[in-house]
Image (cartoon, rainbow, N blue to C red; front, side, top):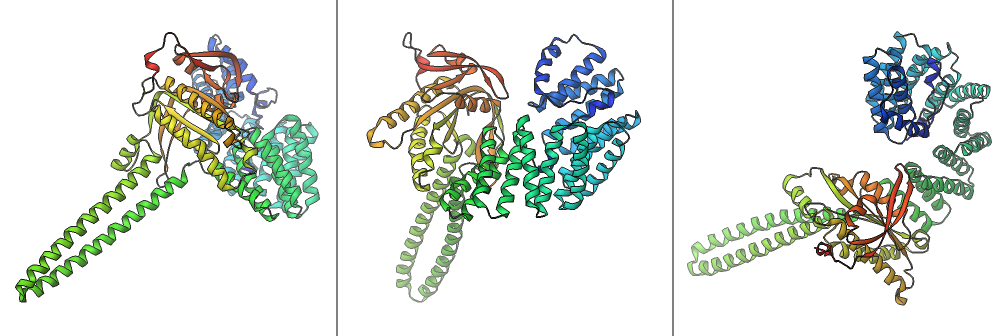
Length: 615
């Protein structure tokens, strides 16, 4: 999400156009209305308003948001409720925008603007024009953006909708700020700020202060910039709006970098990183690591700079195992070069044989000797060349199998590409080392890689033993899956057995006095469900799996305790006959509500299930 999109995600107030109270989106409202929707007892306008509120307030699941909007449009058309058709298209535009489908978001907003204009819903028309302008801003179409901001502002000045008017004046200023028209941007920000002060709209005031602060920073007015951004952060802390706090902290870091106060800039960037990591703000994590790498390099601390640069690369690049894939590419290049060289050698050999034959015409006996030697050398050369070809091919195949499952590697070599496949039941495991981050800060890069390699090599042996599939590693995290590529027999049990071996190995290593520095505890989480598997990339490719099953497995790991195996309810139902499990009860999980979790504590001894044996 770019900085110029900050405001639009939180300031939607078009409900005032039909006399409703101005409000902000609230997921709790959507959650509270779901049961009413499932009961399906409402009719007429009440049902339309229910869908309206559900779509507007749903901010965690954008597929649901879109589904509610589509239902609202369909029913509103059937019942000829024009105003709710407007709301349906507007909310559809929101849903499409949130998932990055800007083309269809723009189409939906234009439809809502058309309906509002035909029905003379002036405030609604102005909000639709503003939403269209926001889309053009996101696509760097500055001329069209300013054209529709002007239409939105002109239309909204005819209404009493001060919030929307202030929002789109501010968004227009933000578009000017992005295009480095700082003086014009400040004029817009001052007008929108005055409107927010007048109506006591604190959240709008916070964004306005932050934007005007960045405008001042770009015009060299550092003190004014710092004052405005600090005031914005203060207001945003009260509303727990951590995304924008993280953005503005980075802006403060830039201000102090300009002043050459490097430690203060580092402090602000570190605060931004801490908040971004706490709340899973991936884009801000990337920006913060990149800025810290730059700041520590300037400050003469290359080791810390290197660590942050590695983290920047890790979060920026979703493709994993890059080093192995690059090695494969290098070996493939060597193979192709050797082929060309062998062709040249064979051509030279043919010329040599032709010269020998010409000489042998004059000297028959000598010809026989030379011919015999030539044929032997040619046969020996061809044999050695074939061995080289086979060796290079085997090396390429082995490297490919280090990255991809055998079935996938065969498909890639045969077809040149791999089709994504859906698996209905797959068991996914995540591990993570407790305290690894603080431990790694004191290690050289070489020692860090050696430590990770020590553990992960053993993990690889364990999952191979149990017929499971390694997917990838991310930092000190390890991910594997069971039930892929036809290997579906008893995969959940096999995963539990592997998890016990991994936990036992980590504990044994910790207790070993000769490995006293490797004092880690491990958290393990497991979930079972449907996934989609495939290969990403066309050069530096990697095998990966996706789906909510993967996300829940990751949550199982993060909500586990050191040394324990935390499993979901889905996995529990598959393994409870063979393993002793302790229920943890329902636990709140981000984006999934309350979920049942269980700790696996051992294998049931009587009776022992023959299917428990690893294959």
